[in-house]
Length: 345
Image (cartoon, rainbow, N blue to C red; front, side, top):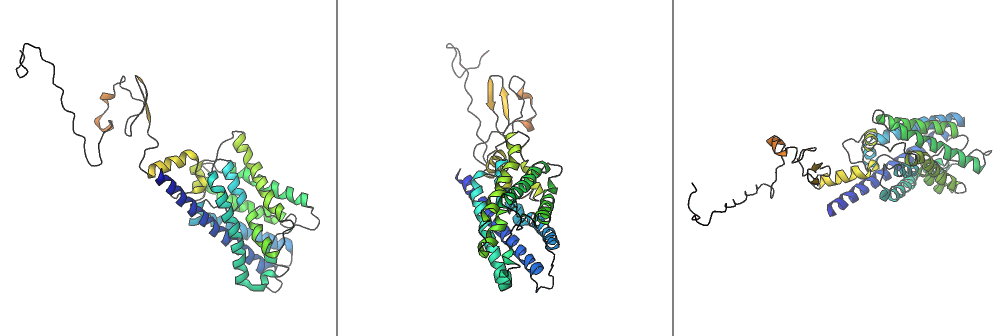
């Protein structure tokens, strides 16, 4: 059990560090793109806000997809969004004990990525036209409308992701997520801001001092994710297939904390400590009994287990590398009138 606990801690720490790194890169790229597209002194300046947001959306979606497919993305699951972490937990595809650690790592990465962009580009990042790439709604949009737009867009994305993550099309999931983010930024960016990611807004808004509407961008996406995950959990539609989501993240051979369903996690942990978690059960003629590893499921003594081919019989061993010595023969009882050393007949 200590080995299993140590393994889980190492997995959690690796996933937390990967999420911190992924979000740091995401925010650094986001601030950099906004700095080059929205700074009037830049050679790539785009005056039209709608066009600029469309370009930002395409680049953001492409970067997000690429990060999910990287090695850190495969190891951690490539959440990069606290709302995604919460939704995967509600759908049974992520362990609840890791949610808080992942979310804290994502917020820390948001602040770190924004700070690195400030160090890299200097005062240009703080210009009003760039403003640390902080998201702001249109002046005509009221807080209630912004909240509804952010929550509903995230709800639709999570609801769709729950159905896309099927074994046959799970590999398309990173691209579907990237495309969804690009569309939300392009369509809702000029209106509600199109954040749908609390970590995307946390660092820029904090460093820019725009904390008035920050609670909307922190709460609304998570609420939308909860609503989007609710049908998959409570209406018994289905649960996200663990191995399918792992395949979608490109980590079929990796330990993906993101997709650790309880039964698969227990199976993996037991395998790593040398226990056969999937040992079949054999129904005996005298009642149910747990079969040892190597026994043939579906056989019983009444059905003639002794007739099974020798290669399929269970091998009972003692210590590793040693065969148990055969039991001592039990002498047969002899009649009183014959000596114990005599021969019968």
